[in-house]
Image 1 (tube, each protein chain N blue to C red):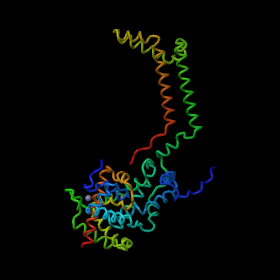
Image 2: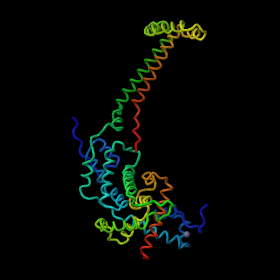
Image 3: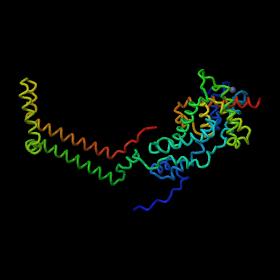
Image 4: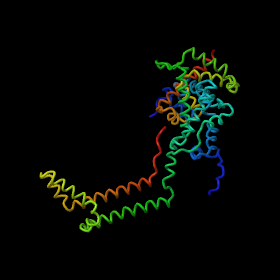
Length: 204
Length: 192
Ligand SMILES: [Zn+2]
């Protein structure tokens, strides 16, 4: 009989090692994965769908789906890419289902109509109050949250992954299944739009 | 050759600048172009503010709610299959030894059969003889045409050697393939 190995120093382990432990059936490894990724995953989804309850449900679904398929994870990919991919797909599916954002057919940067902007802003103003209270301490932060909400979804996830989550371009391309050039273009355009939206706010 | 100073910054140059790397062209262009300078300063402020946005927490008990719907029991997986192949050096040596032994035995038997065809036939082919006799009968009775006669001629006595050769080579290939598979890690499913 082998003696039970001592519990690993979870925070010190790499993602790959934690996943290996999870695949071997250790519950603590599952919980370590949740601990590491619940904030970035929930933050990304919340900033995509702008609804706290919905974001929580989608984040939960993301983890359940990913953890139940932990044995199919391929270590040659970055683990964070895998989980962000599942999270982003969940958010995008939800946006499409609810038609919160309508993609413009003419490629206009202002992809969502005024009514949607108003609805989204109202939502941020009411049931997202407590979430955004932490943010509201900085006026610029609040303005940026509102500006991000007005970007079209494919710009929104790019700018969030790049400048909020700090992911490199290559990983974003992998997460979103987009060519690297497209990712760069989207991020560049998203920054231009945000700059304009913020200067409008300041002038207005 | 660098782009002229007069040309506005490209998206790549702007990215490099935001990452803290700017070429001499970029620096001198920014000294002369208010439009690009305003864009760079705006982007710097924006990127700083974006990266300062707080990470948001789901409600307490999130992990427990997730775990309540997760099945921990490890299922049969590519990882389990990988684990089942001999990975230790000793196990691989045994597998290699087995493969070498099987291969050498088969080659030796084949060489001996070439050198002693009559003895080989007596040893190896009693099982084939019945089959061969009925096959021969079928060919001669079935047709008297020249192709069948040629076939019978070609397969007369050495044909039984051909049977032995094919059978032995087949066994050898099967043994090698089997041991090769044993010694090679299977590739996990590409399913995401
Ligand atoms: Zn310029």
